Each structure stands twice: as structure tokens, then as C-alpha cells.
Image (tube, rainbow, N blue to C red; front, side):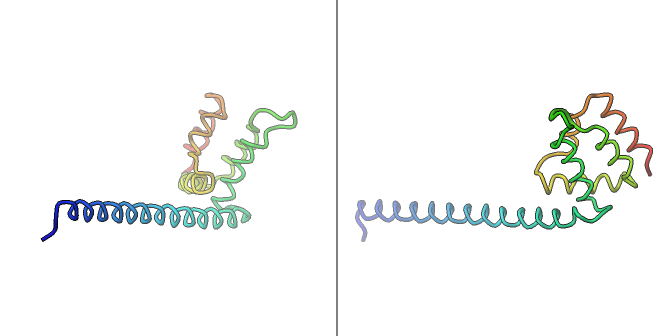
Length: 132
């Protein structure tokens, strides 16, 4: 029969190994998740060079937000509008949203609202709603 001290020691051992197991499993989960997301981003980046691909539109929009104009500030609204004019359908826009999130881990709609004035944003929505 085990003494109380041995039972406490056994319980401590179980708790320590259980904690190590949970920590290791959590670490592995996040490591696998990181590499999966990285591979998805790389796939999207490769497709962003193909004209008409949702990843290409997503990249063009991000560049319009980031590269700004010749003075170095503000979003290139003309480039954003051009991308929306080139989108063939609303379904394609949904695919662009998914690719944008996959590539930049940000919401395209949130970035549009942040980068554009309300009038510019509303004009883009009108352009999008005019498509099939």
C-alpha cells in the first residue's frame, strides 16, 4: 500500500507529464497551422501573377493601398476603382475577398472602409452591385 507522500508524488508526476503533453500538442498544432497558412499564402502568391485570377486582383488592391501615389501618401483610388471595374462578377469579388484574407490575413472590406472615403466606398459598392 502506498503512503500519502507516495500518492502525492505520483499525482505531481501525472500533473507534470499531462501539462507537458498538452503543451507539446498545443505547440505542434500551432506549428502545423503556421506552415499550412504559409503554404496557402505561397500558393496564392504564385497565382497572383496570372491575369484574371482572384489572387491577382487581391494583390493589385493591396498594392493600391500600400504603394500610394507619387507624393507618398494616400491610397491610389484610381487603381482600386480600376480593379473593381475589371471584376467580371460579384462571385469573383467573393473569391478575391478570400484570397486577400489568405494572402494578408486582413479583411478586404475593412481595408476598403479604412482606406477610402465613404463616397468612394459607396461608388465601389455600386459598381459591384451592377455586376451579375
